[in-house]
Length: 452
Image 1 (spheres, rainbow, N blue to C red):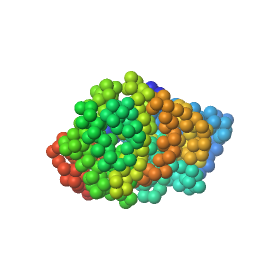
Image 2: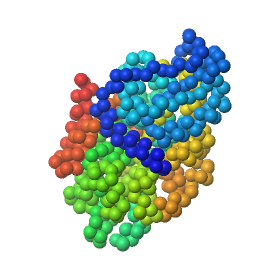
Image 3: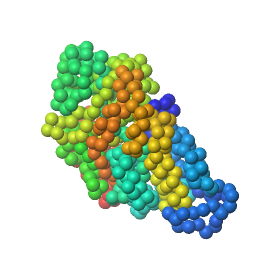
Image 4: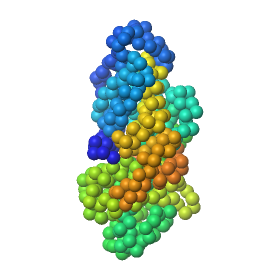
């Protein structure tokens, strides 16, 4: 991933935390209309044609500058295939864009045609009614060509698909094979969490260093929790973070630190700060978990340990519980109900997400792996990566992508994100609460929020 992509992704992850407490932005920019466009526009979803020789401009709001480079690169193809139309993308800070979009949609005016919406945000716009257009009918049989866990699952609510993402965010385990060798640990992926604990104890005994580190200030817990499916919610959108698997995982992370002594609390509290990157560069830990885009963070911030990493699927439990991967992160393209040009909006979204050229352009510019299965025939996805000792990330991702459980969504996702960090992850990882009582408290707080 490029440096530009790294910076924007960092802004993205910081923005997730900010969004929970951010107030709605009062000012709302009016939608830019096309010069000479007809005064009486057709209803949303109906085909519309420009009334003059001037192009109709589809307005799009976004927040991730790396994605905008990809989307802007697709505009010339869109213009060629859709004469009389173009796309203008306006970028805002993460929280500003999502709040501004919510204000405009609730007001019934001023929204763009297309919104580039983060996975945990889109249900905010569906809480009272569908202010985004369902895409199911337009998607049709192409749905079968998508890795659903990353492409549409997190933009699906009550059985309807409202957005499409090009990011195959199948999480992996990254490990220092050289440090494994020093501790007498075989250079191979770890298959189960029980084996992980065993190898962790051996590593700590042999080296005097911690095997890994556990965050206590953000929702990186989602990566492992989602191995079970559902994420924060069940299929009905109710809080599900106190399910038995979630309790088991959070208690496991606690015990790594306080009982098994194979981990410590992460420097800086999360995966995205200088203290953590410094420790990673110094070889203080042997194991990291992350989505493919996190490889870019490692390359940008821990360059001195390039070539010393290998990768593999996530471990599961010996009893077979869990999946070898889970999705984490992503942004989806959506159509707002206020657009007068929904057909043309869909054509732009389709070109970006449902064509090999579109998704491979995203790979070239973003270093993000496609969610569109036909693109996986392109040999460029299977090039060796020097940072990972010339392993081919594409081989691993293609092998496990179909195993990702489908997460569920809810309008209360940002609320639960905040409550989970505040009421569960922080106190459990501070050894002041058990996993069960802490996760029960999160669901209880959501129940109160729903009744308010």
